[in-house]
Length: 119
Image (cartoon, rainbow, N blue to C red; front, side):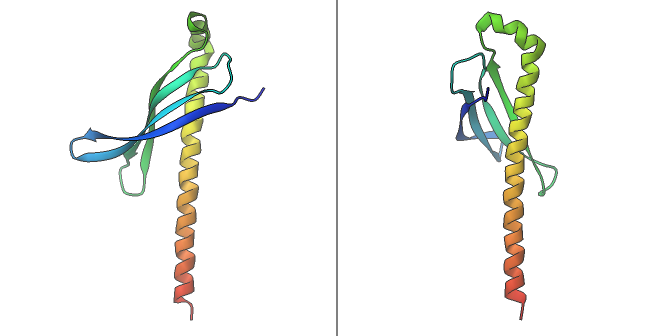
């Protein structure tokens, strides 16, 4: 059975430290069809790295285990690990997309410089 999820990113800017503006995005996702799947709400932040060549993606939030009180034992045993893996996969997918876009832009810059500098 394939899982279908609907999610939404809603941009909002918040100040993490006085004088520093870092982008934050509200994140929600839920299964598109009824079933024993959790709902998630949180915040995706972009935080500065140690230098200008890197940054961190930080996902913070909470999810509601499915099936109310009946889902709590499953979540304690296994569900929270699934949620952690799902969050890590989301961050990895976003990071890969950013990296791919960055590499494409840098390659285009190099190609355009080569065309301009060739005789």
